[in-house]
Picture 1 (spheres, rainbow, N blue to C red):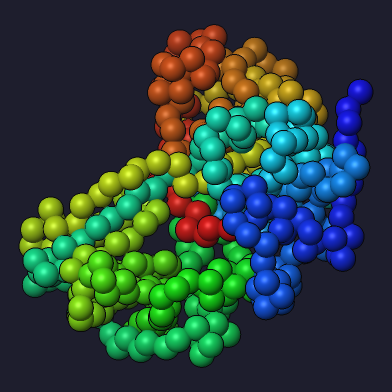
Picture 2: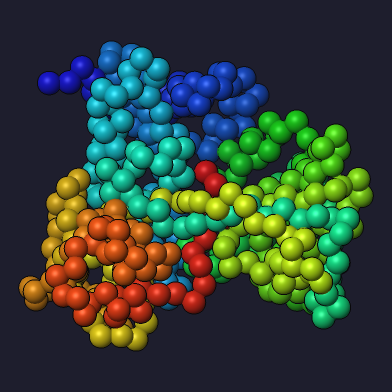
Length: 396
C-alpha cells in the first residue's frame, strides 16, 4: 500500500512539475518569462507526476534518437526533470515514477533511454549504466602555441544568442551527430537550451566556422573577465580543419588567461594541437551519460559488432522481465537463443558494455559479469569494442 499515485500530467500541469524539479535542485520557481521560453520544450504525454495528494514528484522525457555502433539511429527516451519534493524522498516515489516511465517507453516501442545523473548511486537500480565518459580540458591561452602543421582552418564569425539561436538546429545537424552515442536533437530540445543560455549572467556568443564546403563547426562560449576564463559551453565540428580553426579562434580571444572546456570526449586530440601538449590539462574525468536498454533484443540487433567468436549472454532485467533471456552476439548480429550462456549479467551492466566504453573482462573482474565460460571474456571484449570513444555531447 502506497500513499501516492502516478499518472501522466496534463499540459496545464507542466509548469508545476517544472517548478518542483527546480525546487529539488534548490533553485527558486521560474519567472513567467523563463516559463515562456522553457515551456515549449516540454513534450505532451511525456511528463509523469506523483501525487500524494498534491504533486510530490515528477519525471519527464522527450523523444530523440542516438547513434549506435555501426551508425544506426535508435529511438531514445531522453529522461530529464526527475525530482521529488523535500520531505517525500526515500518513500518509493522515485521508484514509482521510474517504473511508470519505463512501462510507457516499452508500450510505445522506445529502444533506449538516456539520462544525466545528478547522483551516481540512484539509477543503476532501474537498469541504467554508465555508458559514456568525459573529462574537462583546461588550456593555458598565454603559453599554448599551435604546432606548425595544424590545419589553418577557415573563417569564423561570431554572433549573439538572438541572431544565432535560429541557426543552432541546422549547425548541430551538420556537425554534432557524426560521433558514436551522439544524440539527434528534436526541435523541442532547443527552447529549453536557449532558456538555459538566457539565464547565464555572462554574454554568450556563438562562433561558427566556415570551410570550403560551408559551415562545418560551431561553439558557444562566454568570458568571465574577472577570472580571466573563457568557458566553452558547446563545441561541435565535422572535420579536423573545423576543429583546428575553432581552436585558432579560441586562442585569439583577448582578455583571457584560461580556456575551459567541460565534458569533452576522452579521445579528442586537443593536447596534440600544441607544441607543448601539457598546455592542455585534463581533469574531472567521470560519467557523462547513463544508458538504459529498454528493448534489449532491438538494441542488440540495432548495432554492429567487431569480428570475433560469438558469445552467448544471459541477461536479467528485474524491471522489464520481457528482456530476460539469452542472446547470441556475433559479428553478424545478435538474436535470442536457447544455447548455454557463457556470460551472465544484469541489464545495467549490459548498458555499460553496449557502446564499448567498458570491456567485458573489466566488468567481469569487478563482479559485474558472472563468467560461466572463461574463454568468453576475450571475444566479448572484441565484439563490443569500438573505434572511437562514445560521447553523447548533449546535456538535457
